[in-house]
Length: 86
Image 1 (tube, rainbow, N blue to C red):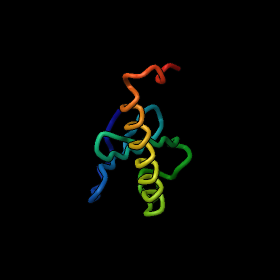
Image 2: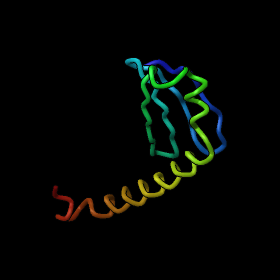
Image 3: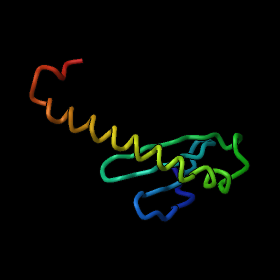
């Protein structure tokens, strides 16, 4: 996986990678991360991928990070109980 773009942001670590004919947008906050994959043939290039990272997308990303954090802390609280069986 090759890093092709590091996008500065005050809250998130945002990176775009290239791997197996796909762009991978990785967004990190604390110990959590979200990844989005898009085929190279589905976009006109790196600039188009970068333009897809909008305020609206990042707002939704934040909501998912909050849900992820809530889910993880709930699982962490339950780690020593029998309720964690699949």
